[in-house]
Image (cartoon, rainbow, N blue to C red; front, side, top):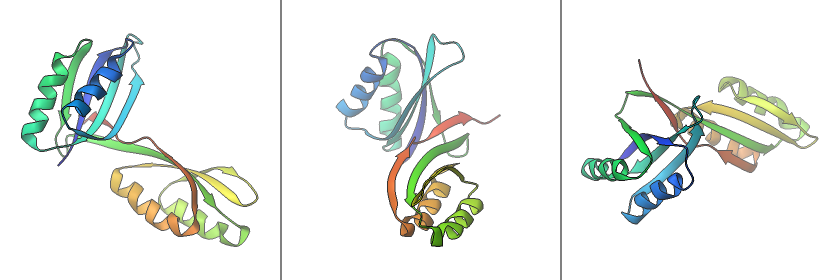
Length: 157
């Protein structure tokens, strides 16, 4: 089962390595891992998507709390958070196919951020299912390069 955990940490050297090491050392599969600073630059937020059952999740949260520099751990159950992912693509786009690619981008509210003679760079945000659907429609045109952030999440309300 897929779980999203948000970890508030002190912005100190080695914190990310300790957290990633704890997950991997205990056999948890990290699907995505993101780190970003908070408005108060003494802190950072780590968002991890891990694959495990509920019992293993409880164990993981307890283990993370024990780590130095961890302030707070929040697990987002289904529907408790807004989730988004950013994806950037370079796709093959000869002039004859550009209008088709642009229509797909319009449907998914993706932005074309760079135009070259034979390629387009595209930026798109959405939840995991929207990103997957977008990739399925763009893939036949030829994805040359891709960068993906993985999940980011904030609690609702």
